[in-house]
Length: 501
Ligand SMILES: Cc1cc2nc3c(=O)[nH]c(=O)nc-3n(C[C@H](O)[C@H](O)[C@H](O)COP(=O)(O)OP(=O)(O)OC[C@H]3O[C@@H](n4cnc5c(N)ncnc54)[C@H](O)[C@@H]3O)c2cc1C
Image 1 (tube, rainbow, N blue to C red):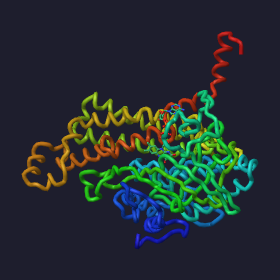
Image 2 (spheres, helix red, strand yellow):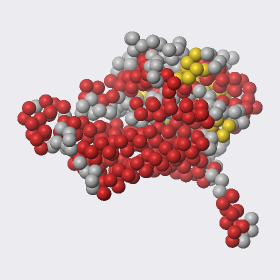
Image 3 (tube, rainbow, N blue to C red):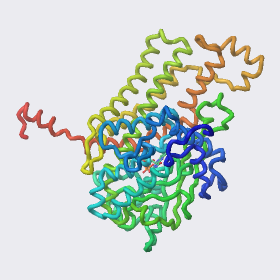
Image 4 (cartoon, rainbow, N blue to C red):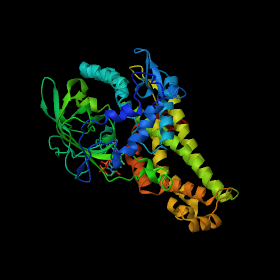
């Protein structure tokens, strides 16, 4: 970035982003404190990936893809914080997501453009916040302004730690608890549930824990909330932002699935680094008043499903871009093996294409059917998003299986860069394991890439993430059941065959 001109004071470079993470945060890995997340092997790879995207914001040919001129500021800011007012703005905002998904091969589920969609989603329903507590509506707008001026990045953390789910208010994926007939009652929470433990003139103190904070160790601030559930007490009805280095936040990172960056031939994806997931413990963490979007009003947490539609649109868009890369990967495998003339092989590639096209269609339809909210924010169509995400996650394992199948033995008979450096092994591999118009070493590199995106532990983590990160399939099915209006079709059938309306 040394020779690149900084195009706006509101846009960080990769180095500025890295500097912002050297802030004495408390991050543990395997029992030890990480002194600097930007240099530690567990966190630095993912940070380098994001740093490149921060740098890309200043590239003249990418500035219109990644940034826009905020009319109030008269300066460029990240599109991550854009409040879309028209379908064109919605589509323009998605260009950022498509770019990030492509650059990261879709394996970064919580890049810098996801969490901003939570406060932006609150702005889409601002009058509901204002009606309950005007100061929270002001805080939302103030936070968007502050965060975009600082080009902030961080996780959105909602889900509670996985302890005994049969215990009252133990937390978990409970958006539809009412419909599922649970007897959960408030006032009997486990210590894991995030809650306010003290209140002062300046703000609140929170304690408790959160389950999986993806990118928490690699971000600046997190957006925290508790899932709405029956009987949530006022002190548990929370939605707020907090800096990751706030005293009392303990970040405990899970075992890494990335590898040494020097192994880029053996592991083209895994060696780049990863999005680190962490368990988050809050011990009397102070939250300033201006950072509170809700405290004490259970009905505001009930807005979660409507507010995070933008997040779900991001998840679907990223999956669509990833699926398009998978279609490309499928063709590269077929070309490398010279199997493209076999009808059975071509039909597998077509299934991957169909998956990509279907996801793209859902994205476009969700934007085409987008509507202005009461607060004049253009928000994508919920049913297209839910159906699309459900289709995306339930078919994902099959698509991974297809990619593996196309590779045959190639996925196992992979050799290291050191093998190719050995003259004897190299000559035998080149003589015996060559590809179609491709050297053995090139074909092997492609197989290493496919291994990393389908089969390696890194791919395993990504597959788990895809399956549950924005609610698992059973809950998505419940959502679709509750929210998709089929009464016009029911009435048409009733009328046509003579049933009472
Ligand atoms: C790699 C990864 C990254 C993640 N990153 C984040 C993150 O950044 N932020 C965040 O907030 N969360 C994150 N999550 C958590 C994720 O949102 C949850 O795992 C998911 O919502 C399921 O909740 P749970 O794990 O608490 O499931 P549990 O409540 O422990 O339930 C286990 C399983 O039981 C079933 N189940 C539970 N309740 C119901 C129900 N009411 N109806 C039907 N089936 C049910 C589901 O199959 C569920 O998977 C991440 C998870 C993974 C694996």
